[in-house]
Each structure stands twice: as structure tokens, then as C-alpha cells.
Image (cartoon, rainbow, N blue to C red):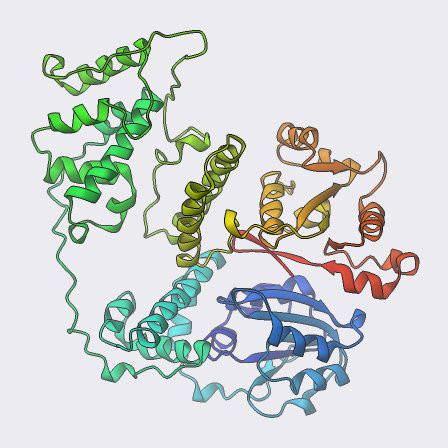
Length: 554
């Protein structure tokens, strides 16, 4: 194999994803290229294992397969295997893996659960390609402009499979399966149903028994005749942040009480701009109702008292919208003081404040990758707000409700949980983190370490119940994408520098040894095994993988 792209073929997609089989590749493949196969592991948590440093590999794998705390099953990438260790793993049940051996081992290719591939002559040994219909796999690959798009398509199939499983397993019904599968051509339905059956281990009715005309979704009506009221929306939300935010919250309250959700497109349920456009075309054809305006100006949701400057902004908004001010009862304002300067944004889409999360424009659902990225970003922003609310003494009952809602959203999108519920927060021992090492898992386009990932790692550690202690190389400040933000994290004590001219490795190990706690690093610490003990390093080291926007810790 010259590159990882050589693994992007219908056969590998069929074997690892649709057939849910394992793969044995020989001889040696560079780990970087081997990881190209990770694209086929949707629904699993990928973990690397270097076989030469593990003394009892089979027992470790058998223990992990029956005692995993991950929300999704583990998929192992195990490399540097010799013949005997490959034979041991072949005898393990209920394992998902890609094995790479340095030896030539065609004689081990027996059975059908582990498909053997000789990379020297690009040949599968025990995979009957002529018995497999690869039309769907070929379609998915040929219609994807790049690897990211292909990965999104595979993930979307996994998401549909999860919905099918829920419908069949919990509701004991197959009537809605055509609705769930309607995004795919009918000739591919059976392959998706077969994947669902293999992944979840359940019986699924065949596609031939599904009545595709049994479900008729409610008509939401055409949007072709809609006028574009985005300019009005921009006038309302862009001049004064407090006023704009209250308007958006009132929009959603109006929707929840006065609009039948069956007549809304999905984007109109969540995007305030799309919702406003719908209301202006369907409910408010003559303009924003006076009752809505009066309720908006009372600021009952935010409980904010308008200042004189805010009132001036309202008059500007009303003038631009053509709203008659003699019919509008403006609330009593409070005087503007030196400490009450109104908060303004020139363009809500350009604001990066966490208070602006409700004003940000939601990407189209047709671009699933961007939409999911947007959702994850919003969850991160909500987390920042919750951190601030905690410091202000907000009641835990309120925050628990927020955490529950966020957790439900994360499960819906198959996102690794980023926030722990307040009521379940139980801090364990310290986890010492070689943060320089971990940040190398996800760099920006310029090869810089992303400072924002420091907080993602922290949240991932907290979600496991550990108290994070982050140690960075002294030189790391020169290799980050945002030096100013990183300096603030150092000042706040979120990250601690190793002494000048030193790497974090020895301090991570020394502190973990002293505190009798575990440490997090993808470094094997071969140079320190004699000093700290190979067995101690193995037993106390946790590893981390950046996958699909989250840090997965094992």
C-alpha cells in the first residue's frame, strides 16, 4: 500500500462496515495508512494497541470486550503482531478489529469472521468477492467527492440503523421503516437492514415485506411562494444584543404555543431566522402583531430592564421596520450609567460570544457535516455559559435540567458526552495529562496545536470523574494556534508548564507516581520504563484518540 487511500474501496467498506467482519492485513502496513480504515468503524470507538508492549494481549482483549464502559463497542487497531499472537486473537469471540502482522501468514486464513488480505499482491484470501453485491458500496464511494463526505454518508447509515433498531426493538413495529429509509434508493434498503441486524444482533423484517406506501408524512406545504424577510430579521437582532436575544426567545415561545410543528420544516424548528421567515409568510402576513411586540418589549424571559440607550435602539428598529410607535407602549427605562453600556453586535453571525448562540445561523441539514459541527459548537458554548452560571451560584436544579437536555441531544447525534450532570458529579483521583502529547491528535491546517482542544480534553476527563492535572512542554507556547488564549489558561492554572528547556514526560510520570494516580498520554515512555517500572507504566497509562470531534479516553 502506497497510501491510506488505497483502502478506500467497495471491498473494504463491505467487509468492515456492512458485513461487520474483522480484517487481518499482512505484511507490515504503516500505522498512518492503516488508520484510513477507521472510516468504516462508525458506531465503534477506535483504539490502538501496540502488541509488543502487551504481555498478556488475549486476556486484556477478552476483559475489555466484556467490561467496556464506552457507550459504543470498541474497535481495535492492533499492530506489530507475530504469528502466535494473531492465532490467539483469532480465537476470541465478540471482538471487532483490524490486525496487522509483520509476518507472511496466509495459512491462518480459516473461517469467515476474519478476512485475510495480502497487501503485497492486493489479494483477499478468504473473501468471496463474486458472492457480494457491491453496488451500494460503489455508489457511496463514487458519489463522494472526498473522504469526509464518504465518512458522513457511512455515519448517516449508522444513524438510520439506530432508528430502525429502536422502532423494531422498543416499539415492536416495522410500519415506520419505509419512512426511516426514504433517504435511500429502495434497491439499497436490504443492505441497510442487513447491516442493522448484524450491528445490533436482532432480526429485522426483509425489505420485501415493507410497505413503502403505508406511511404518508403530513404535508408542510410549498415554500416556493415565500418572500424573504431576512433583512427584517437582521435589523431586529443585529443592533442591540439584549433586545435581539429576547426577540428570538419570544419567537420560539410563540412557535411552541401557537404553531403546529407538523407544518414546519426541521430547520424552522431550530433556526430563528427560518422560523421568522415562516411566521411572516404564514401567520404574520400584515407584519409583526402588536400583542407580540408588547410581550417582547416587556423582556419577561431575560428579566432585563431596558435603559435609555436601549429605548433609542428600539426606536431605530421600529423606524426601519415601519412599525408605528404611537401604537406601541414602550416600557419604562432605567437611566444609563457608566456600568450599564448596552451590549451591541454589528453582525450576530460574526459574534463569537457564548451569549450569541441563539443568534448564530444554522447550516442547512443537507450539509450534515457542517450541521453536526454547528450543533457541537453550540453544546460547547452552552457549556461555557453553564460554567459561568455555576460560579454565580445558580441553582443546581436548573443546571441539571440543562444537562439532561444536552445529554439527550448528544445521544441523538451520537456525540461523545462533553458535560457531566451536576447530580452525578463524583470526582475521583487526579489524572495527570501530558497535554502536549494529546493535542497532537488534532492540529489545525498549519500544523499548530489547537488551544480550544485543551478544554475539550478537560471536559472528557471530568466526564470520567477524574480531576485533570495538565502538564505541558515548556516550548508548547510557541506551537499553539492561539498564544494569547493559551497564556490565559496558564495564568488561570488550567495548564502548568514544565520547567524551561524540559519536556513534560518525566514530570507527568513523577507526579503520577507521587500522587499514586493514573496518567494520560499516547507516549509509550520507552525511555522511562526502567526508571519507573514497565509494569507500573502499563497499568497506570490511559490513552486518548481524537475522533469525530471528540476526545475518546481509554
